[in-house]
Structure formats: structure tokens, C-alpha cells
Amino acid sequence: MKNYDDIIDLPHHVSDSHPHMPVADRAAQFAPFAALTGYGDIIDETGRFTEEKEEPDEARLAELDETLRTVLERGGRASIVYFEEDARKQGGAYKVYTGTIARADGIFRRLVIKDGTAIDFENVIGIEPEEE
Image (tube, rainbow, N blue to C red; front, side, top):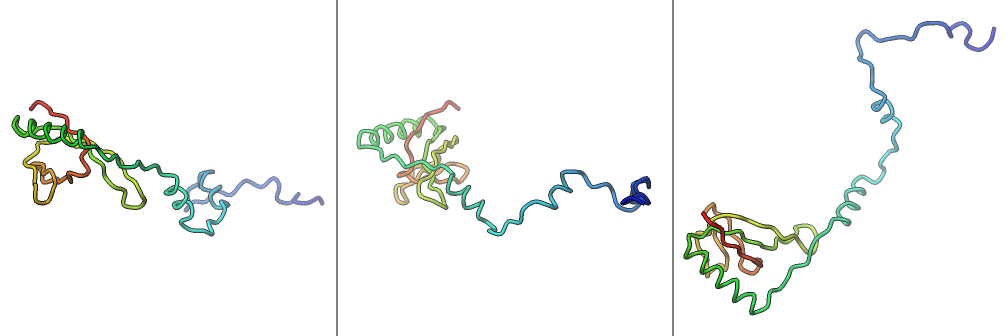
């Protein structure tokens, strides 16, 4: 009798209580063990791109001030380009917020939008008036 001759022609067993496992799930059983938990996340975070904040010159600040005055006179609707610092690493990203400016708060040095959002003056790099 050769090896396995007694069982080679038997039908493959199919469980009545457990569904068939997909091939992808069976392969996952043999995936390598991640001994350094979180290492992949650290690598991804290191590779994440952030931008450096622009520092506007005096002429640009004067232009922003004039644009803000004009926007407030026309009802306050504008798109504001501002810099938001990254919470995890140096730098950040430029974002655009469109809304109606309620007021320019000189005490706390920020723009207050009607929905309650506040953007610090020092982070604003552009104001584009919009029609209501």
C-alpha cells in the first residue's frame, strides 16, 4: 500500500456549522507578526507633508487690512485663506474658510465668523470678497 492510498479518494469534508473561509482570510493567518506595533504609523507620520508658514510683509498686511475693511462694509461675506498649524509636527497647512465675517476682534486679534469660528489675524494670508 502506497502512502495515503486509503484516504486519497475520500470526499473533501464540508462543515455544516461553519461557513467556508475565503482564500484571502486563510492567507491572513500566515501573515507576518508585527513585532513593532505602531512602527508603520510612525513611518507614515514622518512622511506626511506639511508646509511652512508664510510671513507677509508690511505691504501685504496693509492690503489685507484694506480688503478686510471693504468686506466688512459690504456685509462681510468672504473666503479667508489662513494657515493652520499641525498638531503633531512642525509646519501646517493652508486652508480656505468661506463665511460671513461678524467682526474683527482687535483685543484678541482674530476674525470672528458668524458661525462662531475664530481665525487669528497672524494666520490670515488672504481675504477674497464674495457676493452674497
